[in-house]
Image 1 (cartoon, helix red, strand yellow):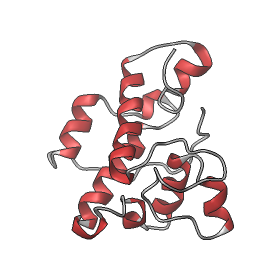
Image 2 (tube, helix red, strand yellow):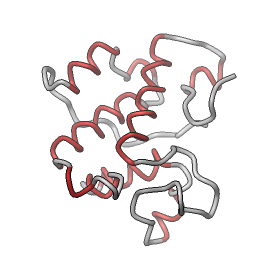
Image 3 (tube, one colour):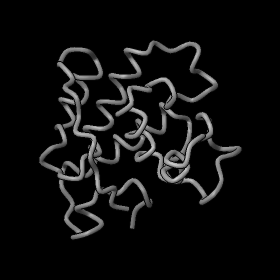
Image 4 (tube, one colour):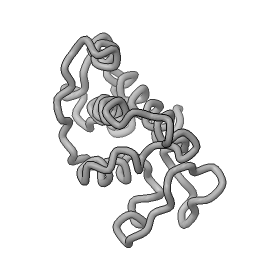
Length: 142
């Protein structure tokens, strides 16, 4: 019941559906749109479907299979453009990418009470509401 990698942790762990489950799924889709790849990759592969830079070091390779974990590692190092699909990277604004990534990371917080309501997500993306730095620690429940 649902697509692996898009289901909110509270739904997976406790079968409790809330309004914040949709926010979580939206955050995962937003990450896909930015990166041009699915949030779950085949173990050991990063070809064809994946349009981000291939991982270089051991840490990146360990996180590559689960895109949100890899994104958190890049964002924590302020490497926002590395997350962007290589097919469009040259035509994007880094500040806009940073904002979109921060919104997406707020949406995929493990704790539903930390996720913003959807109307706030829209306001942040439209630039009408300040985007604070999201927490960059996740358990990454699948």
